[in-house]
Image (cartoon, rainbow, N blue to C red; front, side):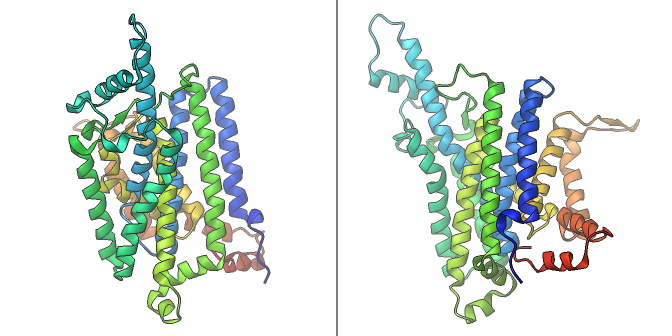
Length: 401
């Protein structure tokens, strides 16, 4: 049987088409004043979360590694770009203020004033060592992918070479994430402790560009990143590498007995997906405007796993579907979009009950639709009378599904 070219696969066409329609439609509606800037930012942030969900599906749905720490890499990417955004923006503001003095300020004076402005909230007036290159955009862009990748490489090498698997590996990833978030909460961590990095929506050098335009730019960038990574991930799982990943998920010991470097495969996918999460975080937090240690707490990674489970493990487009559905519903319920329900003796406020609703939804999907939303969609597609049986069989036989 000949394989369908990647660009002609129905899921690839559907995902790329939906992204194109979404970005074009949101742009036209925003320019016409039909949707707000905050909603455009919500769409952009949702696409970033979808990118993280696709990465999670690669490492969990296809490889069988339940990582409860991938949102830590997401947060690290946000911190990496946030350091440049905050330092460059603060230096511009400080330089403009000091320029009003009779004598022009020296670079050292601007640097000192910027450090005091940023770290005065934690009782410091100097830049920590990790901020030494924070004024260089290209260095911070490299850090967005290299720092998560290096941490994942070291952690994965130690864990996989020690043959740690299953629930023990999940506990290790969760413990590492908790340790990182607790360290970031400290004021002497060099990243402003609980205050985090704020004002990230102000892009240095683009202060003349309104937020309505910047939000559209980030929406386009988020859509391009998600589309590009989806194609890369789909190509990966459709190749022999993807077959090896599914074999690791289904019977790791047998694949090792056949002579495959199981640890090497796991290390590659674990490191690669962590770098993708770093990119997603770097696009997400300038739209959110702030990043703090709470974003890296283990609960965030648990939410990521829930999104993938609801969308459907082992279906990359299902991960997008689950993350998008939960993210948009969360914004609607917690943002005041859902009306309160007055029962007379008690008023249901969805801002308080959203997490309960999410938990019930996860349980319902687990019991009633183990394959998630993607499984429901495929089940409905198979019931279509005009769908030829031969085509369905060919779709089931295609690698990566």
